Image (cartoon, rainbow, N blue to C red):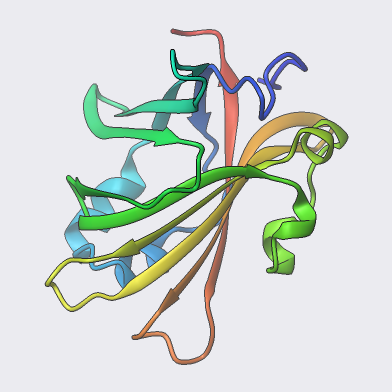
Length: 188
């Protein structure tokens, strides 16, 4: 389902379901992040649902909290973001110790062309959500991923999209670029 206009980068509150037909494969991205083959196969078998709560807290900070669910009722973990671009360390259930920082930013401040491509007019006006995370675990998988979140028109429908660029010490021939597409859902 297409996302309504009132759901945008200033109000991402809603439920979004991954669209595997429109999204790029995440296998290489997950491999370089250290996810074993059998887990990558399991992830590819399930649909991911993002239940997003976007709000301003009592101190005036913009926040985006995301509960992730895999089809079949399995938990995919939670991500809680403060859009102040301050480094925060957390222990991810899948990837181990990570550091991330998140902000809302005009597209002019994004350097990678792939991360800047395809956004709707409202996303351009309101700014993309820009998240950068990097590994701090001892598994030997050292990587950095930069993301932009917003909305694109795909086949005439407005879809929530996340664009990711991953650089890894293991990938010598350049970064991995992935576009993830999500359908808006009326479920809560």
